[in-house]
Figure 1 (tube, rainbow, N blue to C red):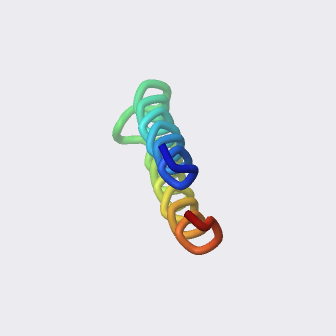
Figure 2: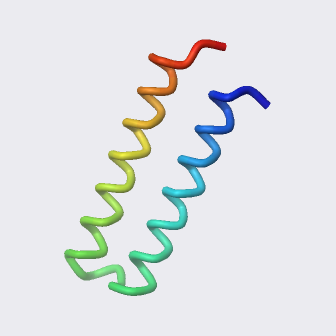
Figure 3: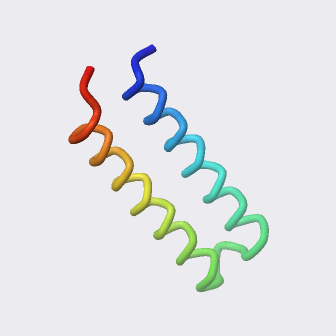
Length: 57
């Protein structure tokens, strides 16, 4: 597995874990749960962008 792929897998697992924890602790309807999901998703997009830009094969 390439370094880029490993980082993408770690980012995807982190995103899934953050969404699951946000829903478990805050529920679907709370603002805190929704904000954690949105921030995690934006962080995941940032990780994908940085890995594509900075890491060579």
